Image (cartoon, rainbow, N blue to C red; front, side, top):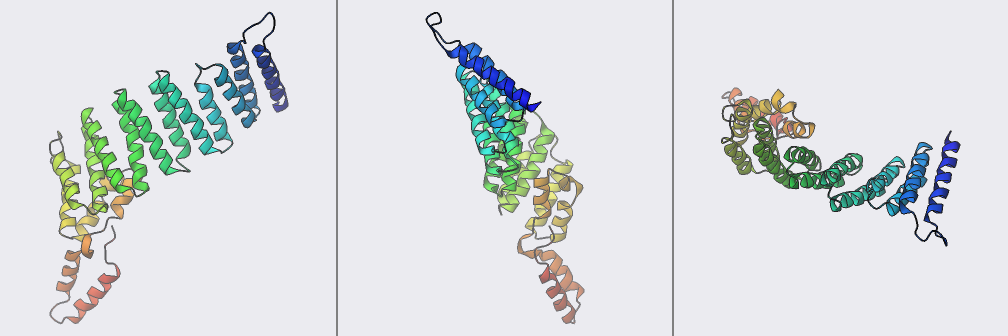
Length: 306
């Protein structure tokens, strides 16, 4: 079967080359017909799993049929089949630029999203770049729902990469977009994510500001999300290890997107949780020695569990 497909591919290439020849009676090459034959050859090579030859045929198709930008993207997909991801992404990005020049930005954005998914398991930094580019294209087209979904992917990856300053900026942009499209429940979730990111950055003031700004969102004040963040910030500010632990391990935070849930369960109280230590000291009584022993035990776990 594969041999038959390869033979068919070579037949199409021969026809394509014939279309490109000129003679005394044929003064102009037939580029459209040549492109069509190269496209057929590419499919045959692809079906025979001859991906390198399929890639070359797609590039030939793109060369002779300049209006067909998908051929270059298909060449990238052939690189993907060969596990040559950097080359695959290069071709797909090139195709996206041509989509933009050709006045089809939506197609460009969707191709960038596909490229991001391809490269994400191998290169998170490149995936962030591709998702942000795709989001920018959709935003320019006023397709905010599509844009904010891609921004969300980028934000989560920035957290995973521990690029928290950038994640904070990306989350604010997400939140603003959700507010613009009036998806207020998602604004609440983004506020929670912002608080976790800012506390991991060591910026309590920024975390508190995010909650205060969200009071203006319809339904936020008094909501489960709001109460949880107020409780978390109070516990963090007062170095109450138990209170922070309870919030961080509540279902509301534990069942967030995985990258944010990890921020919650790894959050530590500054100073090692003063209130818990004071409680331990008071239980030691007037003798002093049991309290000292308790303090030594606490020191082993200084910083809390969340």
